[in-house]
Image (cartoon, rainbow, N blue to C red; front, top):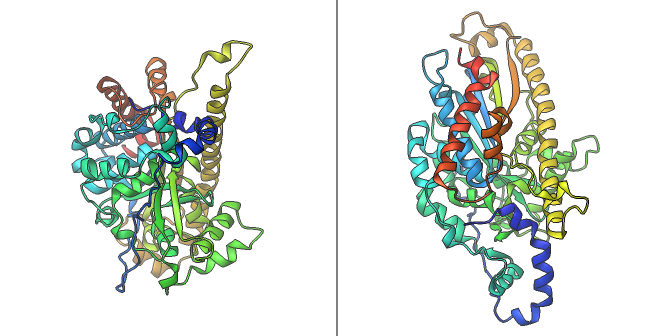
Length: 466
């Protein structure tokens, strides 16, 4: 079986030390991977852009955390639960989902939902969750050959993940397929390993690279989001700055040197500037989004901080017509493990590295969640002020067809759905599930059932279902 990717990543220091000792002996065995970038330069024609969010009435936005098949199955259960819950108009709450931002294992589910729509969800289990491809992967840390692979960059080359996902799950789908009318917007999140900033597969980042996002394979975006360091080689994205005529947005240069701006905005602005400087960056190496933020919320925070309107990424029409926007963060976090907390001796070296890595990942995502709650609160205030400042004629035009429209009647809310929301015994079982690309069928059943039950019990979802 595939080992816990984060657990394997936590062994990177150990692997590196072993590999350094054996570097001379292994140099003849190791092979250099001349990775081909997964993206292409912009074409001469105008580039397609995703449509805005559909903000009419009550809408739902979701964040799917990382966690391998555990996260994929739990988030799939949440989607199934939303589909079973009616909305006020006679449809289902699944129809109200306008945006999904996702990381790693959760990105598989999100991308599949974006590509196939709610009507195609029933095949997700067959296409991904029930498949066991662990035998295709290099996993043993006891193999000297794998030491060489690790020293050379990773136990597994990029094609072992991206090409498998493309052949078995996404079948040559491209990001443009995620932009179909009526489908939720899907934001797949990775980490730029060089700059250490979150990297999302959205136009902002690819415009900075002078690259055509629409033609990127869905599988490669998801593979980038899942590429746990040392387990998988980073996904390579090229900058085509030398042949680019598109200027960066005005806010980038301003934010890069604005001491009053948020640090997330400043470092991201500097990273975007570096993408246009061939003396600094020619290739990005993207790894698991969980390295920067395992909830995929940082890209949403960034979009609000960089917004030039009080309502973006909503459109003006959406901002006027939205009534409630409910963000549900789906947290498939694994519980702490190891019996060393019961002994005075404490953890050994490997356990210490593992706990330290877990602590870093969890701290980053919890900080992102707290910052996101603040961002949503300020976004709601900005939208309300915008609505109430509109001339009556403009407000009436944008709100046409809405009975008893009130400029102040808008509410944005954030909540988290996790294993802690379930029966204690079931929640403990699911939280103990390993982070692997495939899991036993009975555990998949329980994770899906847990997702269904957790969203049905969520107060925010129940309010929308009335």
